[in-house]
Image (cartoon, rainbow, N blue to C red; front, side):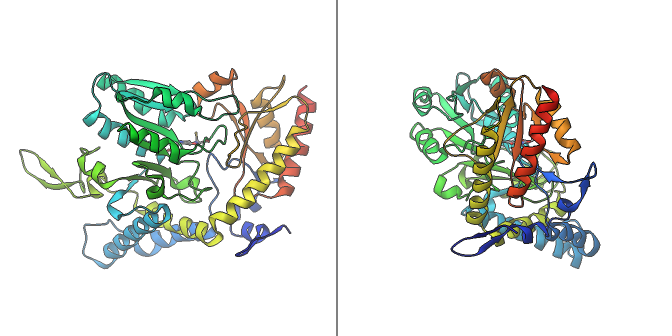
Length: 414
Ligand code: C6P
């Protein structure tokens, strides 16, 4: 048993693993080693059983009915909103909007804020390490508004070059949309500093928190982020639910993203008025079940503690980085000083997909390919990488097993 002593509590990874039934399944007759956490994390029993509880005891539509089930469902839905607010330290519940995930959250801002406020010749700054979800929505709105997208370059380690960022900042820049932690490199960006500098030029900042939220403390007020997006399924919660945080005055100034039920104040044959925040941006029946359940994922993370999670994951990352560096021909892609637990690498002369297939035969799940960051792969002159990403339930012995399997795969493929 691996136990990590910390000041406040002990980190008993074997105990934690018992909370995740899927970790005890076999894949290809081997014990599952799940290292694809950056794509989606596994779910603890508390989340799984909360979903069952919802559908078996209080499934109903919300904000509409006055019957007991509707009131319970509404209460549970709104309780999650409050727990999300605390989780990221937003100042008001009106600033928490439920979406399908990070992708929809960013599309909401790009579409609503972008179409309302971007003018021809305005500039949108993105970094060279953005996920397609934080590029394509901006390309779409840039085309519509005749605005220009500019890219903040990164160095070979995978860090934003702050001097280049400074050079790009001007009064033309209206939006800086940037990832907090990169899914392909693991880099943690100096987001507070980036926001501070953008604000000095009057730009609004959108933070893609898809990868950071399960690993790092998130305090949107401390960061002074204007918008912050994340997905439930990457923080041990369900798929199909995510969050957009937005500062109240910005959300108030934005037109609705979609029209339909819930987002209206009043509708006549002539038109409509909008509902108050956050409902203005929650058209139609939302994903009630998964929103209700999301708070159980947050509670799970809080029970273990972000400091403990970070410490554990950093140990795994360091250990795996050392071990993999011993293998000849392996090149780590993403060597920033500050990283979340993502280890991406290429192997000389071996295609990443072949490695992924052989590891899968050993029960090991990693992700291979461009990780929805094609421009970043072009920046490095590669087609893709192998990516192992660690979560709170992974162990050093899994890393050892992974290294053995990787050695074996490389021997077979060379
Ligand atoms: N990255 C990965 O394997 P959604 O799909 O909306 O939950 O998240 C999109 C997204 C946005 N930004 C970043 C930084 C991300 O990592 C992701 C999702 C997954 O890396 C799937 S491509």
